[in-house]
Length: 491
Image (cartoon, rainbow, N blue to C red; front, side, top):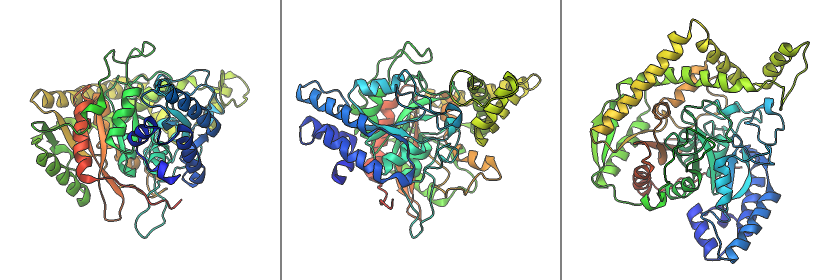
């Protein structure tokens, strides 16, 4: 059975097509693996009966020669995606036992293509966090451990449950969302591949909103090829989401392994931070050498407004969160705490229903949008965002095809180690990833090595708008040299 869970998505797809294995066998192996790995707290809801029923239906379609692109592939879905008839809470107490009567566009496209639902994965409450410690269901533990230590480590956030589930071989892929790095940072922390597509490439309909102008769905998988396969099913136009691009979806898998000869890769000098660990610097240099050996040309570039990205992001994102989360008031669905009158009921429900980090961000967002502060904070942050976008546009106009940077400023850290007394310490984890969201660009994190304690480290590639294909080609070139990183199953 462990042989089946160690397959990549592409390998499992080919074996199902060749009828070497059945979808029920594959689903059963993953259902068992999920049950044995509850110590990780990667799943907040398991759906074994549904998984086996969907797998049975997949076997029937395969037998008839009607297999979809993801037929019989067991996937995990982040608890931010609405799943019809299956509890969806955004890992917040305020949503209680909410069961949607509708399906998110992204997950509906996965089921359309034959995928199998294993369950809902844990995430930071309303996707607000960089470590998956703010979830109402408790912290997720990374499948990784430092060499010679049993200290529980974070898988990164907010898509920590999805990243942990893929890294622990509990599923063949998982959906995730990225508002400021929430796909790429957990992927880098867990030795998995995560891509945040261009803003508008995937529909946001049916995904619980955090910051609407920044949120974007994407996959976390074991390999670059698997990410390409999964993204093709997830992406595409959607009339229900006006921000979704009405563009055809390319065959991303065809880009994997494609030559990168002649591509110009920008190395932004602003990403060389003071105090950055030498192992991150070394991995970055190594990544440059790999791409150069593959025929790419490296050029130094400047993104001068990078230093303003993090403060601008932590004005724009909380402002949009404050607006989006106003709908959770205890009236129509979810938690309701009785009060003396309707205002008292609102206040008590929101105070009890939202966790500390969500309350902090809602208050920051409400403050920066309030009369007298809107111009000083929110409007100025939006102007900075325009300048960040322009920095990238100028580099791309000068002939740069993509940029190579570290994905995170460090390897994974221990549960409870950061952000206790100083939230900004936790926010700094997003320093290399937020620019991509602010500019609406695609970015992929690919495992590229390990630190001195044996923990995975990732490189990030940033591409031109709607040019995910170049990222898959470059990502596979790095993956070919770096190899794969698999956690030892301590759990």
